[in-house]
Length: 324
Ligand SMILES: [Zn+2]
Image (cartoon, rainbow, N blue to C red; front, side, top):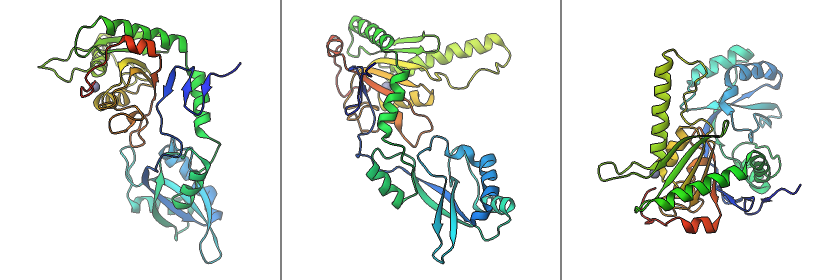
């Protein structure tokens, strides 16, 4: 079977333009991490400590080497170990506490701790990988990540379902005779169930009633009602409203709505028409933030523009200065 993947342009099935940074065109997004230097003979003890205390601090950072050997300049080999962020929302430790933890585990009292700037994003080509490895911290190269990502994404896509929802979006949008005929549909893909369909209802008294925020609010209300009905704590409930949901929308969402989608933990967004001036997702939209892939946020999702020109022509353009 031939895969319908255009690797160069990152288009799947000839219909889904993936929104991701261009190869070679990215700069490192750096975060400060604690790195310790230890005697190689103490590495098993340190690895035990890392496993129990610091494993989660590099979740999602599979492009980084955790440990590497270096010459200390006096002919001795030392191991440099990436430990944890100096400061992050999820993790916080003082230098003193960290040092005493390390000494406690290894019984080596001359451990050196230093702060290093570590790239949170992975380079998209081998040359940049080598460059960043020299400049910042050794990175692993497992082949072109774009090809790997696209193959993974392709496996998880159901193009017929996506097309079905996009047609529905276009139909609903066409029926709106307003300045802002935006429509969004939230779907729980595990059951292929629509959780919310919102049509833009912004008005003078509520100008930020955007469909995406409105959809999240509707799902929040439903979840609240469900929990109140159960009266007891549901141990299986997760606290993210749209966990791994798919969102389909007629026009690319603004920055606020894109952030809302990150916070509610969706896994996939498909939009029909780009909002070049005000959008928060597209490669060339707004301030080119591509919020769905931002390395400074602790959730990412895949986003695509649906490239059906005929369908896009059926949906009204909106004033480019309007935040969708
Ligand atoms: Zn919005």
